[in-house]
Length: 240
Length: 197
Image (cartoon, rainbow over all chains, first blue to last red; front, side):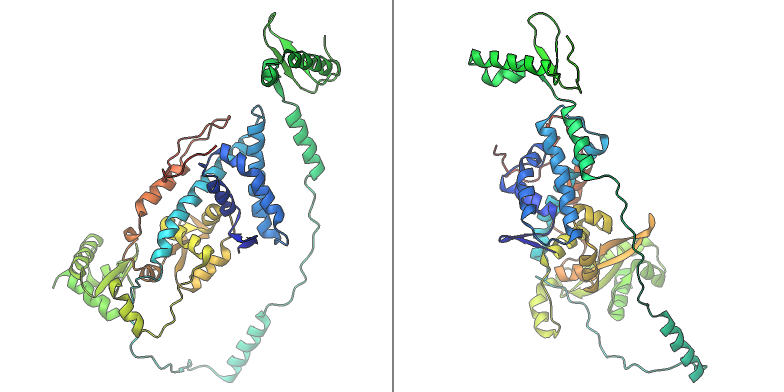
């Protein structure tokens, strides 16, 4: 079932995703997928009155895209095997879908174009009703009763409350912990964009010291004058 | 009388699809001899007004596709050529990847294909068979009618049939990409697309 978004209609999330990637003339890989994540989500936000079944497909793809984008923004993020598998799976699916679409061009050209006709039916057979010899009125009556008993009855479906497995808030908290728990940056990396201006480096250094004082960040320096490594790891009390 | 002639006669008389297995038993020949006979018949019929259409299991006679306009004038049937996007996608998958389960079709399309498959089955373009590997699910494959409607006499007549299957196999056997976004080996089919950053 196609959903109209402005003037284009898409068959499903993969159709939309492929379209976004091809519009930018990109190959299918996690870099390009990260790039089109925002577009994809913007698009699905525009759908109103999407039937729940269909929207589930879109949300599933959107969640994998968000995973890919998160990974591209936070390279140190550790993905579970399942998450890596989901990302890999999405890339494969998109490639296969694209290949099938290309093949489909040939199919649509051939369909109904030069038709091979098969032998038409010759003489139509006149049906003759030949009931079994031992059919009698009683048997027919019993058959009919049986049929009536078998007619589907309107059932009241038992309703169950869908058990809450995990709430959205809990999930958000878990994710936040995961992401903030593993931020690791070297001082050099942190300041490399502002190196030209010495003042910026000094200000960055002071900021880092402040973060250490507040117990948000932990720093290590291997040897004198070597690079300083900052990391957050649920640091509470600052260590000196 | 050669096998080719016997097969031709049976197909003409039957006026409907017949399985290779049935033909083998009717003619009392083994599969290899049957296939050889079919091949001979194909050659004999090339350039004629009549042709053979075959799937992996069945075969029948039909008019040559070049004569389509002529016969179309004579037939009173309404020929619906409208497939729709869903129909086209699903048919392409069944044609190039069939026999294939509904779950696998859904995997490729990213949507539920239950309804479109049913519609295609009603039109006689797709048929459902038991899955030998899984008693609970079915496999979907193209019908002789579909081939006939496309002017195809056998699966290898489909454009790029082998290439598409090879490409898809290579996508599936791709290793996982590196964790920092480096691209895996792309078997790109379209070298015309450029990366614009």
